[in-house]
Image (tube, rainbow, N blue to C red; front, top):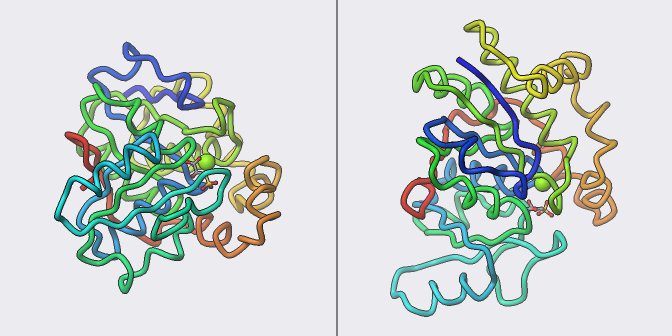
Length: 234
Ligand code: 3SL
Ligand code: MG
């Protein structure tokens, strides 16, 4: 099994993901939100690119939708929830379908259409992701959402942890970038010591959202693997 990494939503190339298992990571915070919401009984998550797209889905349907996401890390006007995973409790999201738009995360998810499977990963469910990758048994591309088209330390470190979970079970063929993410993870297993250098970590800290950071850095507290297929994450 080969494992490769794409470092941002804007670097996704169709030919790199076709016929591969893709794992999309936006650990701060979009995929952490999705994994948490699904673990707390959310029926499904519809990722969209714009606030207008989200509004259209809600307007044209009688189903009960919740709107969630962010712009500049802040709640969008008129939306039910922001992009804080801690808001997606059983009490707020169980039995609801979430329509979500975020700056980088939802873009990365939608950009992976064409892959044979699109799994949603974060620190929260890394071991479960590794198990699923092994079950599917195809070559893997880990797609980091990144930040505004740029490489992001947080997603890269999370990729390294997922690779570490896979390597505990099999010998995989790592690309240079996959090898590097694993190397960095192995030297920073207490990920806080390294992730604090991520620009987005600083932005979230400035907003006083340290509780989100603490939560998103927790390893393997959820064993669900959400999957994006036909426009919805289930
Ligand atoms: O970029 C994204 O998709 C978001 O997850 C970023 S934020 O952490 O909500 O600001
Ligand atoms: Mg991010």
